[in-house]
Image (cartoon, rainbow, N blue to C red):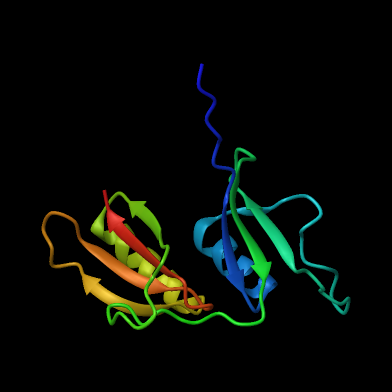
Length: 137
């Protein structure tokens, strides 16, 4: 019998671990792993690794500190995406709601393809420059 590994989580490099975790926590409605919650007001936040969980407790995203993150230049090929997240919503109204929330949280809009009748989508980049797609599926 063949044994296959299980994908535990996707890890994103960032120079601001708490800031990027907060972006995705607010965007996706995730929760911190117990012990990873923000410190009390006025307390230092020395987090260099944080994990976000789905409501069912499954790991979804983790964030690790790095000194430098090079923002993608996509669609120009100088700095490729290398990896991106695909997020789905049920309707074009939800698509626009998520786009607006992402922008309010600090995302950058990279591409508007909402005129595609088969797969309307937006491509955005999180505050650390990692691209992600939101599309109707």
